[in-house]
Image (cartoon, rainbow, N blue to C red):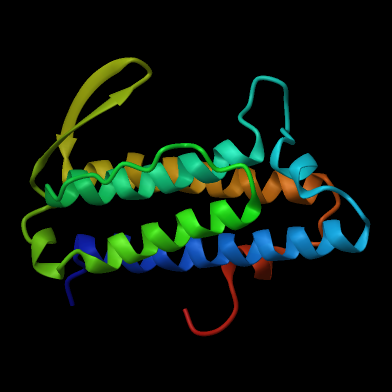
Length: 170
């Protein structure tokens, strides 16, 4: 069996984004129970030079849609970074899932050898679609999803590995 770049990206992004949305729900429930304004969590960071939670979620979604765009040539939709509430972040996640699910599997044909250009540390780099997805696209996406999880966990939201990985069939 051959693993396509569609199979290595779309279902992986979809599941992790749904898990991220569920994690945000848990954060709101936790904040409500403790009478903490959710904006406190949205503006929390792990370290002063790192993005706050709201920007981690925005960047994770940007990484996923950018990867789909680079691998397929489909136009990269613009998502203005204007979210200020958990509900708005969750709506952004829904829009992204709808976008990636709308891309036909056929658009990924040949993507493993398609040349991809991406800016890394201020420098434009060219690589194959396979190399990009496996070493850049997924890595950047998971960095921001993990950091969002870590910010919430650091603030006391009771999250565990099952929340990150998700429940149900893989």
